[in-house]
Image (tube, rainbow, N blue to C red; front, side, top):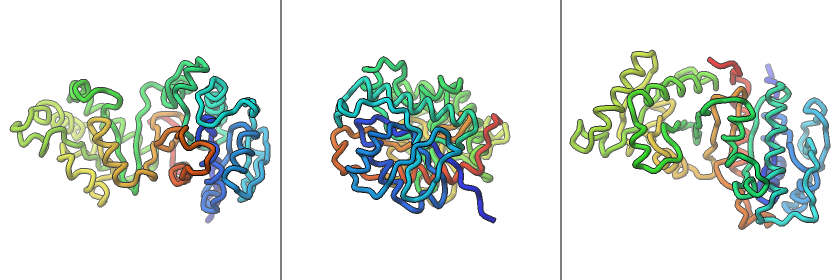
Length: 337
């Protein structure tokens, strides 16, 4: 029995960045079309230019709805918002038109997902300074998606080589992050992580919580955070029915997860999980935003303005981003558990 290929919307990102290039490079790969129906939301003129830059044998097929797409290798199906003045486009430069365009591609893609016309979003890089220049009131994708879908506090998950990493805290100083490592927060995140994995169709959900201090504190010898907050949070998670363990020393928990001992790791702070993922495979580390009404995957790199328009950017991360969206799309449940 052949599984129907899911339609994956790909907002092309900031037109002055590498998003259009890596998207066009990705869509020269047969394996992308084998697993999904990619639909680009962007500006056709910018994409035509990107095709020329990467020297790809691709043709643009403009459509007004996802149902009209051909979804065949060699044809790039595009919902063309026609919102970029190509004569004013400068690669690697911050611009209001770039920021506004990037926002509009995301907004349209979200609209398609909320209407059930596409199954998932695979997003490309946007630029914070360009968004600011356009007076777009968001600093990044997550904030846009929160507002556009009326979702509170989406949950970020990294996946690389089968290892899944969640984050208890994100963009905080380490000092402030430690203050957030409470029993109540650990419990809340364990419940949310378990729900997120369930929505992605992950049947076994053994979650390890990383330790904060060396050797997870050695029973209080190297700090009391594990004793007073983290371990009690894990125990409360177990009582709530979560298959949780920890705290597991951070110098071994990620390796063990790569070996399959755990289905996911709850990282306590930003760099703890980011370093583990990116040292495993920088280009194949993909971000998944959980808690939205639809599935969203994203490359975990920026617009790379310094190399935009030069046919230097690698498309590996974009390819993995699309393929991961296709992998989870058939299993993903849109209802809130």
